[in-house]
Length: 136
Image (tube, rainbow, N blue to C red; front, side):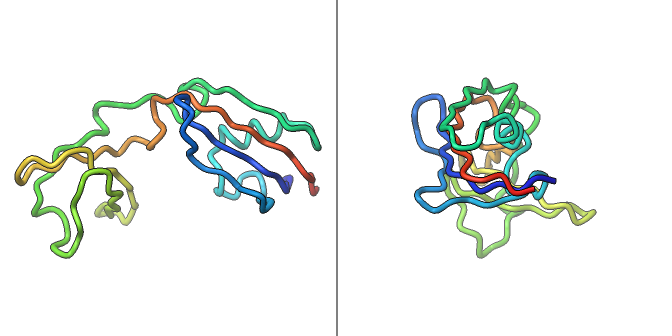
C-alpha cells in the first residue's frame, strides 16, 4: 500500500474545525486505520504538491445517523467511577470483546442517552489536503 506525507484539515459543514495536522506533516499508509476510508479515497485522488479541497456529503463521508444507534441506558450500567456528563465519550465492551465508543447525549435522572453513531455521521464535511510526498 502507498504511504503519504501530507498536511490536512477536516471541517464540519458549519465551518468548525474537526481535526488538522497543523504545521507538522502527517505520515500514514493507506489501510493502516489512522484515517477513515472516505478520507483515504480523497488522498488517493489528490495530486502531489497541490492544495486541494474535497467537499463530501454525509453519505460520502461518515454515513447517515441511525436512530437505532442511539440507546437509552440505565446509570447502573456504567462503572461507578466513570464521570457521566453530556458530550463525554464512553467506551463499552461487548460480551464478545468488541469495543464500541458512544457519546452521552442526555441525562435524565437514571436514564442516560448514548449515541453510538460516528460523531460526524449525518454531517457534510470538507477535507483540505496537500500531499507533500507519496512514498511507494
